[in-house]
Every structure is written in C-alpha cells, then in structure tokens.
Length: 320
Image (cartoon, rainbow, N blue to C red; front, side, top):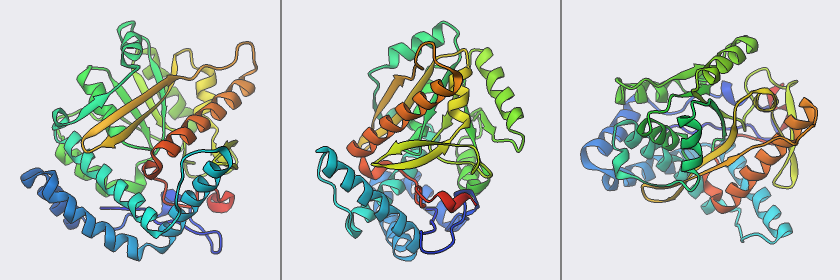
C-alpha cells in the first residue's frame, strides 16, 4: 500500500506531487492477489499489518493527519458538531480508512462492482443530463472513493474523463491498468501547458462527455494561482483553475463525493454547483469555490477518516 508522507511546519516541506510513493511493487501485488484469490476478509488483516508498519514509520504523514483531526475537532467544538478526537488511535484509523479504500479500488477495477451497494439520491438528475447529451463538469476531492463514481459511470455507459496529475502515483496506476486492461480509463493528464488542458476539457464537454476534477489539491507550480477559502475554521488554498473553469463553461457543474458508509457500501453525494446570477466571472468563481469548500467540510465532519490528504494542507509555503 502507498501513503504519501508530508512535511510539517517545523521543517521544509515538499510539494505533495514530489513526495515519492512508498512500498514495493511486490508488496502491492501480494496484497492485491490475496484480495482477488481469497476475498476481502483475508486481505483486510494483511492490510492492517501493512498499515501499522507505514503508520509507525511515516512521521510527517502522522503529523499531518493529527493536525487535520485537531482542526476538525476544534471546528466541531466551535460549531456544535459531533465529538471528534485527535489522538494516535484516530490518526491510525485515518490511515486504515485509506488502505481500505485501496482494497475497494481493487475490487472496482477488477470488475467486482456487483459486490458493492451504492446509494445515489441524485442519480436521476445526473442521468437526465447524460440523456440530454449535455457535458457535465464534476468537482470531486481526495475524499472517499472516486473509483466508485467510475464504476457507476461505466454502468450507465457515460464517458467520464478524469483530469489527473499522474506522475506521483505511477506504481499504483500501473497496477490498476493491469487489473482492467480492456477498460478505456479516459485519463486526461495535466499538461505543462494549462491552456492545452483547458482546451481538452472544453472539447470533452462539447462532445457531451463528463469531466471529473479533484479540486482540493494544488498541482505543481500553482502557488501563484490559488483561491482562498474557509475550511475547518481556517483559510486554506485551493487551485484557481477548476473554479475559473466552472464559472465559464456552458455546462452543468456538480460537486460529487462517494463516501464509504460500511463494508462494500457507498453513498454518492452529487449536488449542483450554480454560480450567482449576474455576477462577474471572478465573483462566480469565488462563490463556487466557497460552496465547494463548505460541502467538503460537511463531508469531512460526517466521514472524518475519509479525506486522504496526508500532507500539510494548510501550509502556504509547501509549494514554494
């Protein structure tokens, strides 16, 4: 399994995309083989052992996890939310939830999505967009499982293009391609030329395809292209590009998260993200970013172990 460590405020940090994957291909293959051959209940104890090792040796990632949980705890105390603890056990559960999400990815990419149960309250609304031939921009996060959304899209035969920065996860991406060699993955790699990436996205939307972007993490070199939002009681920085795009595309925009509610059980939360009428492009983008951050915050409160950013998210100097 791979967990990206993170820099702390007390020492120099590296951008998350330059933090190398940990673990070996052999370890990944053994874990995935156990899952495929013997099932979930044999693989899960193995994953627990792997998680324990990585948690014990990943000092920076541990610090980032504890910082996130402490911010969440303080925010809930201020706003009257549920009780949250920020201790080593809760942080370990945070890591464990990430490992379980990897196992679920294995199943989904191996064609075992029939073993999963999905609750999708707004599915009919999104299906109507697809039936009308409209392209849709989906703004997600490193929360829950974006692969659960992929499984639903394949089931409904909707072309979904995922805009991704792929260089930091070459090993795990290679594994999933091997698991599902006959599937058109439709990944739109982030180009060094942002204009090229935007043109590709617009072309997909014009064809009536869906485009999915994880909008909670800065890509390399984006330190000067960020937007400030309120998140868990403090200002955080999110990338400008997804929200500038959302404010200008002639296509419906939705926030969408697939949250794990139990073993092999997910709830998909999809809500329209509409800009204020008559506002300038900048004001529309600001409003959409603020609403996105609020919805992400609400999901973190209800599913606190499922936001998988194991680096110093609030550190403004991390992209320097």
